[in-house]
Length: 457
Image (tube, rainbow, N blue to C red; front, side):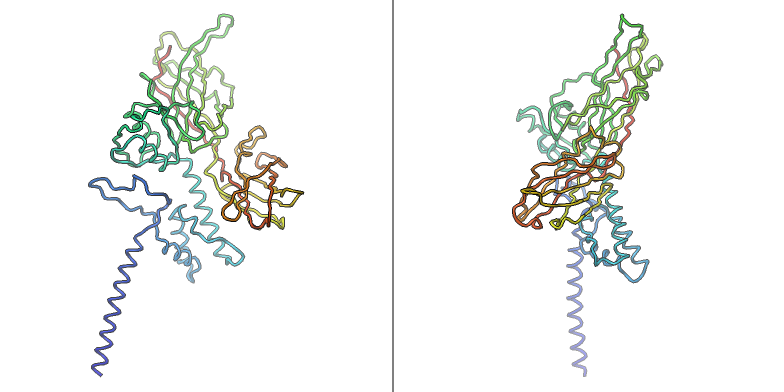
């Protein structure tokens, strides 16, 4: 009897040691957290000499996410509420881990998943309109710095000069979670560069050798930047008008943004001279729409104000605001099994995309797509054709891409557009997925700006 008891104790001890070993292994594996927003490893993740990396509190392991999703169907209401709260706190990085809702999804689970997904989509879209952040510490060649900033922010930056010595110029940085424009100012100052605002580059900013001397300070807010270009004063002798001063400024934005229109209410332009004279806009009733160059990252604004007194030497302040409509980050709306022509819809963010019908018409397949914005903020007016450039294609077996062979509008309103796309499909249409790539929201931004210390001519 004693032998058996001792044997059982020995076996239990072995199992206890094995259990402890498995627990250590599990904890080690669990420490590999999923970041809130997943991305490739970059220089900012490499520790700087003497520094210890701090863990992001908004992280979770894949195992924790799976358990939390299962907990949404727990017996106790408090457990279900806690799981929903925790999943929402983890942020938009877990969107891809949430299960799809289908006919087998329970009623309460469906509601909770919809709430979580809606909250995280809104958070993701709201973050898109904030300034990008940059963290980079150490000494690196300029070319490496620019590539790293592109990786962290999605903003492409190139050099106008092909001089290899400029690309290899060493830059010493100590940037810790700073806004994009602050980081770029630091880099430009060290390398003696400036942004070339009207350089033709479809998807990025261009840096060129600095030629500025005593330029007025730039204004930055979020992803936007405003700089003074020039000042001129005119007096027409053939008119009774008192003359005016025109300040030309340039509005620049982070390249990842693609504004579709911009307006500036001239009645909000106000200036103050160094003699305390306040000057209003010379065209207070005007509200012009500013042309935006296709693929560019800047536009020029000409701001006319009343002519200051001859004693004034400078404008100590020039303030105003402009309104800009900016599409959000893009999302792929995916439609499968469309050969039967059934209506399908997908909503992401503020945009609902509906495949209203699909049918064969001779040698082509017609796909009628209706795109509706909850709040289009005027971006879908008939003369704004940006929405027609949204990429619409079929993805077939082996990831083969089949482009559309044409399209035509069949509906147009202030909040939605209907487009009929044509595809030449050889084989079974259900072997393909229809992809509509579109911004998931349209945001109207009112940017108040203030420019200081502008010398007068």
